Length: 239
Length: 243
Image (tube, rainbow over all chains, first blue to last red; front, side, top):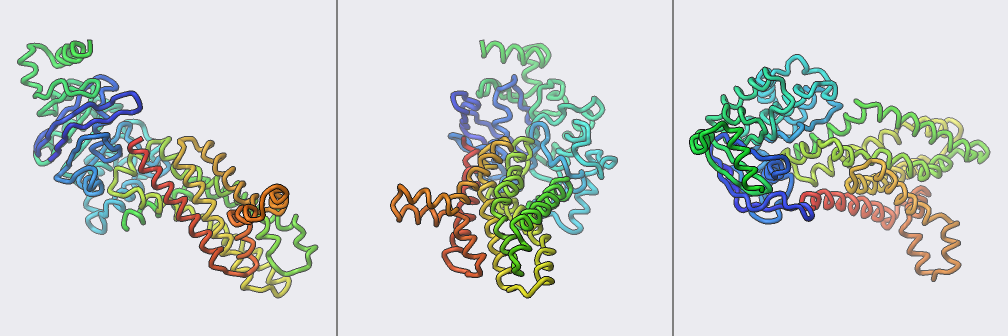
């Protein structure tokens, strides 16, 4: 459902993404790992049509990101890093705004809200303005925004960052629940998360893919924990 | 179309959920009244709104960029632009939604100066047509200033920078048409160039609409100005994706 071919993107002299290619199918949960500044967020932004690649192409659900950006975004749920939102709005008003843009109206809107609000556990803050919420709640509102139209493809940039252990557990459970009928890309720094939710993992460093494998295979190959695998791979290749 | 309305509605509401709208309206209404009476509204002994309309360009030079500066600069600073532009919406729809919401807000501010019109009607027998064209001219001028402000807001992440740049741009366009500037320019520039400067200015076109003459060249000036600057903001925002 996601096809990425030879994406390249640089910011001035810095090459952020340097020839990245991969495919993700329905039912896959792809863990996107890499040290800070590896280019994870840039790839995700390109897939969400927020940035344009310098070269290369990608498609989401068969829609090309350069030719049909609006269709791509329609079939995509995207949670950006730091879960940006309109801070002066209440959670309810914000979700209704997203419904407006995504053309979810009438009884369908009520159904979507009734489904998403308990799912992301934001009932208690529904009438609060977003700027007064804690980081964890803000992220859950971001997650609700990304899931409200029940998209086929989900791109989550560090979805559990800033959440407490209980919330982390809940989000992982949520991802596992949705995994079978969606195609999900999750970026993270937390390796136990990869083991908990991902069926595949890609390690990227300095804009290049170093490893495209499954957590089990990697552990088998290196005979150690994922943490150590990560260190071995990223340090060896960078040095 | 749906997405355009969603952005439009959200933007307009956001003025009134923050103190912004109220601060703006109070200050705008106070100064528009103050400047009118300071111009010698009573001394003119004429029941018309000239004194009111004449002071508007000066007020707009500061007030309109203050409304416009947040349009995109704030979104970019807070990061919510990443949310907005990853929703199924084109940049043009987003730009138009925001621009028209801000314009409607300014229209509300202008409409709230209605006591001025009532005062004039109470004191004498003014030419209503003149008042209507005066308001139309003011609305078009507000749109022109806003389009410029919208562009500079799209250019910079900082609201202060976008405010300063658009104040300067608007002021240049207003003062270019002032008699003092034109007199000075005519001392060393050929008449053709002076006329060109005069025609580029808000002041010239605003004054002629305000006199009750709706001419094609004045209307097209404002329409072109608005369309041009709004299109430029849209292009700039699109280019941000690659630059």
